[in-house]
Length: 250
Image (cartoon, rainbow, N blue to C red; front, top):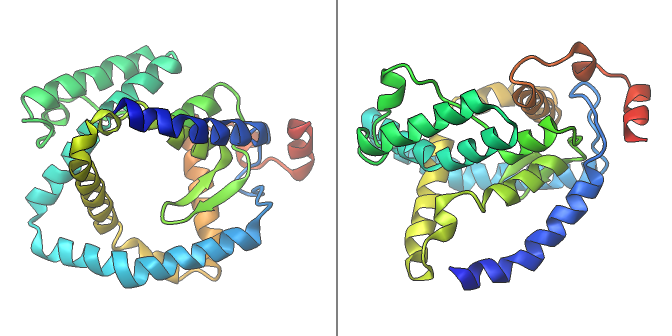
């Protein structure tokens, strides 16, 4: 475990430094900053092809043979496994209500929910919390930076890529002993398949768009902006003009 982390640190530190430097720029979903759009579109096309011929068929098979109750339990398990990320980022944003809610959900679902397989917390009225480091950085004023499309992972931004890297240090699977790497990779594969199965209806909406790439970009950035502001986005942040962007960048 220690060896794995020590090997990753130089690489992760380099990514963090580069992306944070580019993250000072604010741009609204209505006028996104997409400086490497040709590259992003190429990666988007690659991801779409891989999804269509590999991931989507696997997800459809999984959805067909796996009972709904089992799929729900799989989703519950991974949601519970990610609660430490919610807890840490709630604290970093000084959202103590969210902190207590996430901590309560982790305790209830890990015990009464049999390791998170059952969402007992929601059943007793403890709402879900969704916080990550990308939101935390936005909360403290870091701009979203350039729009990015990551191979296999899909839409992101400079800020959210930084957040993805940082959140890995908060996720329990990072600290599984190297001898059990096969367990970690099996869990990650199951998580991806289960998540993709939950999006099987979305491609119909995407295929109806004149420019699916632009639609996905706007959809992603708008939802991430709402996440940073907990749904209460100032109008000027949603519809900021290019001149305001230049001022923010400066």
